[in-house]
View (tube, helix red, strand yellow):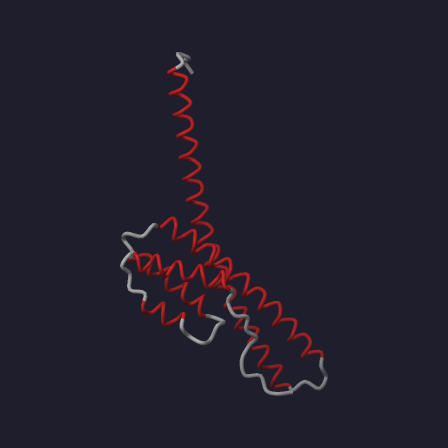
Length: 170
């Protein structure tokens, strides 16, 4: 069996790349320097580039005074969910391959040790992805609650206005 030099990789899908592209466009439209983000996205290594770009974009969002925070947070939440799905699929596949390798009595112990090291690395990356996904989902839920309260208040005010016009006291 040939030596293992890098972990199992699942490249980002088109929807994930599209969402990260949207975030970069939002930041650029808000006059934020996105040069570093573009450098990250141009890297050949597909496994981490969207994750790293989203981490940097989250920091750059703080600098963007004229950025629609709500729209950007919603897009970030969706992008992080896509990254999370990809990393979970990669993790499952990697664990499956490691079980097969460990069950092989002829497997090179060095290869098994490398695979275990890569497994631990993927687990660590999944923790960060899960944390960022949860953070942006909570922010999005906050915006949803605000919007729901605003709509409810508007409807109540409209109902009161209509009742008043009709001469019915509520």
